[in-house]
Length: 259
Image 1 (cartoon, rainbow, N blue to C red):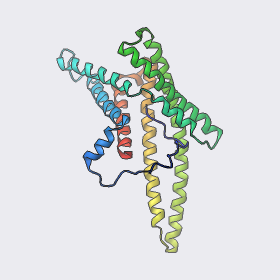
Image 2 (tube, helix red, strand yellow):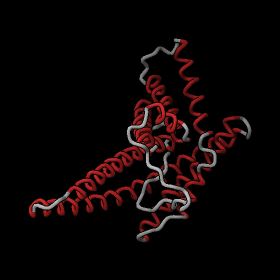
Image 3 (tube, one colour):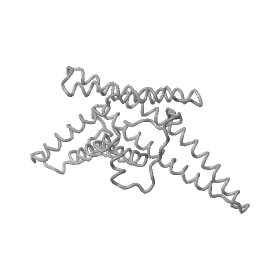
Image 4 (cartoon, rainbow, N blue to C red):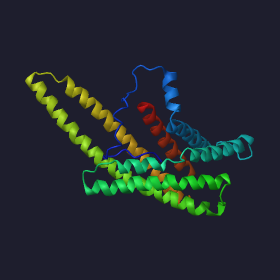
């Protein structure tokens, strides 16, 4: 599950720390180094690897008797456990995000508590699942922990999607205002370069917001499949694996653009 991008504000920058934007025309290897230096960068690379492997296994293109099938199953399981290690302490970011947020309405306050609270609880419980699967704590609690984790994740995504839909509505309103300003400028024959640049950036933001909503829906479907323990059409292994790969690719793209 990824961090919520919503109408609430993220923690403010330290005034002594200069705000840096990704340099334009940066060398590919430099960009890749910066991407993999982030926890989320490595995590999304592992997520892509895992769900690509799960798609191969779920599609039954390889016979069960083939030795490669066994190695792929072992690889998928190992990567899944490795990803849980990257979530250690990640719940703190949700606490901080909620603590530093400013809300425009009671609705945003409630939805933010649902979104950040659900995600934070998910990350917190995932730490104990990792310890259970690693053998440090008794595995008898693993099933209950996974149920709590899945429900927290699913509820968190419901809040996240609701917040992003509100945000998307605000972006659409700003876009309409800018389009009107540009039309007026054209009719009067005056400069409109600044407005066109703002409109382009706003449309890019709108696209990323829509992709983020698609990602949340995909992750939400996987959480629902965990809650239902693989039962039902929407919990079919191939369908869930495709949803996981879609989510991973969108998240990797967002992290790549932002780093």
